[in-house]
Image (cartoon, rainbow, N blue to C red; front, side, top):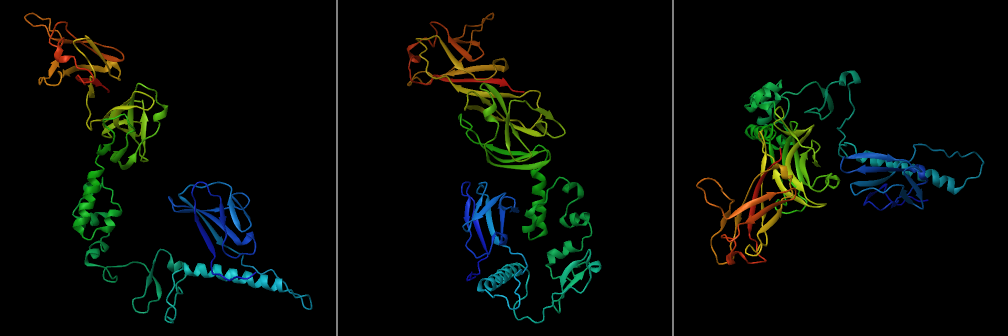
Length: 437
């Protein structure tokens, strides 16, 4: 075998279906091959085992499992650092034995060159470089690697001070701070100001102490107890909602990006549904109601924070989407507005509108009635007064049943008229309030 190329590894993107990955470089046997699985979402490597995780035949690695798109398969040259060919005096000398030994040494040289390429190296021709550490393990322990400012040699030092390090004037203000309290003072903050702050990677991009103060204050504001800046799509439809924004959950700011939620399929129709934000960044639907937690500053069920409420009216129907108030309240009432729909009032006395909530929780209902096109007076639909000195109203809320709110107009009244007999026409709107907590 010849070794005509310098290639010593192959890397393939996984796609959830492909299991065959060709080897494009030279090798002597399967013992010369190492196969790794790289998880791009975690940045971790896992060494796969031949005949357990993969097989090798006809210059192709075939994995037992299929891997999703977040994974890569990496096939590398990895020969043992041995030479097992033994030539005996006056014995037959075959070209194959000589070639195999030279080939293996070449493969080992390729692997070592790859390792050297991934090391810190000085430029070729720089004879002044001396990368040896003069100190022993005891002297190196607890110290820092440092390049001598005059010779460039590697040394160990126990500490750096602003005067011995090349840094900006801005950086010097922090390098001589010996405690977190001193750093906070430099930033113009106190310990109490920073207790709630999460100083993240954003600080690494700040160029001045003033911008660091802004970043720190923003982080503190964002995880204020009870903080919520959440948006929900499909508010006025029965489509699946998605959630985008930030919610404070158990003292941690959790971010959502078009999160659609889980557990919806296991909830029965005609159910009150609570939308919970979890600490791991997912949205969870549940029929379990939350309770106000004063210590946490929000509506909670165990460790999950309730952010919204909606109603499941069918296998796939999401209705009445509402965000919960950020303050504790004795009771939470939500208001719904429904179209009355087609109603020829001169022909039919009663109209039933499905409310799709628990009827015992409805506390208030009224309607606005539209006359036919061309009559420019909308009327509120009110009931009989039936009190001393009162007048009889033109309509009444007939009843609230388990499924419907029934509207009934008075016979020979204002609505029993040709101005209210159009069809294929929304007759108005029904507004009702119901209690959810």
